[in-house]
Amino acid sequence: MATNRRNQYIQRAILVVGVLVAINVLAAYFHTRLDLTAEKRYTLTPATKNLLRGLDSTVTIEVFLKGDYPASFRQLAQTSQELLEEFREYGGNRIQFSFQNPGQGLPDSARMAFQQSLVEKGIMPFNMQVQEDANQGYSEKLIFPGALIHYGTRTVGINLLKSQGGLNPDAAMNNSESLLEYQFANAIYQLQQKRTPLVGYMLGNGEQLGAEVYDALTTLQSNYLLDTLTLQYISYIPKEFDAVVFAKPATRFSDEDKLKIDQYVMNGGKVLWFVDELNASIDSLAHQESFVAFDKGLNLEDLLFRYGVRINQDLVQDMQSDFVPQVVDRTGQMQPLAFPFFPLLTPTGAHPIVKNMDLVLSHFASSIDTIKGGNIRKTVLLTTSANSRSVSSPTEVTWNSLRTKPNPREFNKKFLPVAVLLEGEFTSLFRNRLDAGTQQAIQKATGRPFKNNTDTINKMIVVSDADVITNAFSQKSGPLQMGVNLYDQSMVYANREFFLNTLGYLTHNSGIMDARNKELTLRLLNPEKVKLEKSKWQAICFIVPIGLILLFASVFMFFRKRKFEV
Image (cartoon, rainbow, N blue to C red):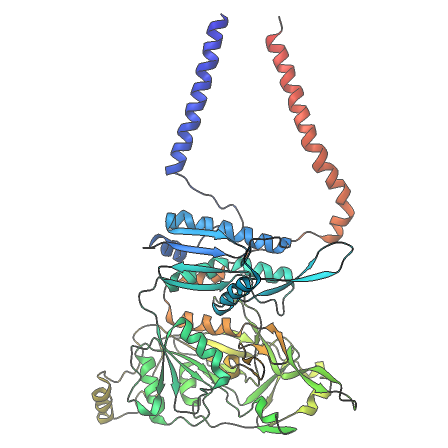
């Protein structure tokens, strides 16, 4: 009897082991994953899945988030690892990643050189304050919360920590986690593209091409094929250009100029406008106490109106603004004072271009009105805050206004548009305005017939402040990054991110930008409740597990005793 029972136990054990082995073998070849989170935190967008499935070479990712970091950075590292593991589910062995501490184990000189190479690849350092001991003060530690993505012979760097200007640290970190999929997927997409989009930087109407747009031009060269086009020297804008950029034109556009732009748009060309409608700049205040802002006379009103927007003859002022240092007393004491003509623009959050994006720095921006009618969908991307106003041209801009505290009751306008996305079927400004001979001349010059409308959905973005993509110049450091205040270089606004997102949306059709719509819910504990109930929950977490184990052991022994008692 005892032998039979022992054989039964052995057979059962072999059967259980066999079933477990079979389950593990099947799970290695056939498995699935369920995302039970409300916001689908662990679900990739269809475009990202298609990108990873279509990889034809290995992508190697180095993430620089390994080390003794605060809890928020450890959480960012954990989220990054979980995302990359999800990437591997679709990319297989073509996705390889590792977490590193940049420069660890290297001599000081080699470590500094390596860290400088990360900066050159666009990975910006973060100066973190660390408390070494409860009884000691804080020390500073330089970290590089970014990653290098290698694909073949090409490498690109990405920042995983988004700028924290205008956001509390928890919200900034949450936004950083929300954008991780887009950051990694977009970098892989750009690296594996066989053809890099060609962008034209337009000249001929006083557009800037000096140190003040150094960062914009460098950003373009790093991400696109870049060429310049002088509008007056060409008979048409070639269709090979995926997009063209107008950066702060200063002189009048002729009808011939506008016809070239118009037909480029009608044939599917994308245009990114950065236009100052009024002649106002910080340089005008460099050697004088005040100046009068007036119309530049660009002659673009009718063209932009036909496409669906009007840039108003005004300047917006905002209670949410950047500052400039000013002398505040007779001793020469300098103090940073908010300058309402330097509004910090708020992303609307309703579109992938600006989703989870920080504030954008602007100087002397105008408001934009959208025109009803037509087959154009208008999406506002950037606005002023809820406490703003507009002053009509001509208007005086003076340093004395800095010394006068703004009256909040005068700032009673809300969310004035400053950047607008236009999408749809555009109609030509010159429709029914050109005779047959002129249309034939256009066809002879361009090799394409004159078009009254676009054949498909086209896109265009209008920004009523060209200083969004200009940069300050430091006598010590040279050209700074766009979106950086010359007098406080520690604050970096999202101007470069906005510039890249607008160009990416106009030139890429992959759907990767949809990943920017992912939003992670920030679920924080109530600090007061945690403080009041801390002891109770500590006791529960300590006693309950032990009690359950003792209860299970008691029940197990009771039934075992009943089973084997004589």
